[in-house]
Amino acid sequence: MLEVKSRSSKGRTTLVVSGGVQHRGMARRAAGGKGVKGARRPEVRLPVPAPYGGGGLEPDGDYDGLEFRDADLGGQDGSGARFMDCSLVGCALDETRLHHARVLDSALTGVRGLGTDLAEATLRDVELTDARLGGPQLHGAVLERVLIRGGKIDFLNLRTARLRDVVFEGCVLVEPDFGGARLERVEFVDCVLKGADFHAATLTDVDLRGAASLEISAGLDRLSGAVISTAQLLDLAPVLAVEWGIRVED
Image (cartoon, rainbow, N blue to C red):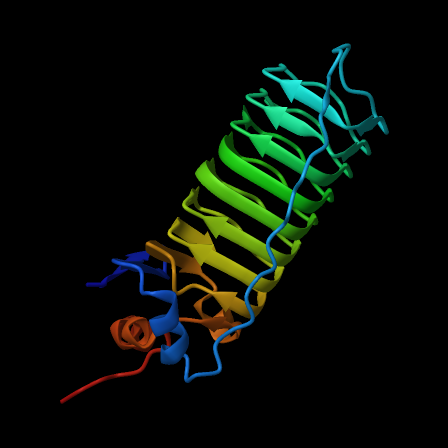
């Protein structure tokens, strides 16, 4: 059973949808049989890594086949660095500067931090698992074949970012900002979105049917490139009517 609520604050209507997740086959039939192009997930197969020797990150550094385990990288500057075939496990990333960094064919597990700066970074074939991040900056970033699974991310800044083949699975996203972003083949599976902002975003083959809870604070008019289930559409009709100023009378 889905539950839909409408909240108003400072002239904005917030849409809240919560409830069970449909079986994928049922959801595809609900979309009229055409379905939606699914995201291609990353297949990260790391070689046996060498332990990171410490010494701190360096701007434009080159890190290949390394394991960063329980490393405190807080406040360090790795702007423009390249991470290839790397594993980061339990690392602290408080205010770590990774502006313009490239993270390729890598796995990040249990990382945590506040204010991590990944603005205009490139993440390709990356798995991010059980992260606990607050205010990570990924505005202008490029994410391709990225799986974000489990964990909780508060105030994720993806403004003007480009996301292609990205899956959010089993995670909690609090007030994620997709303003002006381009999303193509993006899936939300068993995840919770609270206060998501899609203002000025462009969506293509974005699958919201699997969201365990969906709350949209801005950008309802940008959902034309998303797919929802028939049941969700019926439940959303009253809220959409309010958003668009449509009077419904018997």
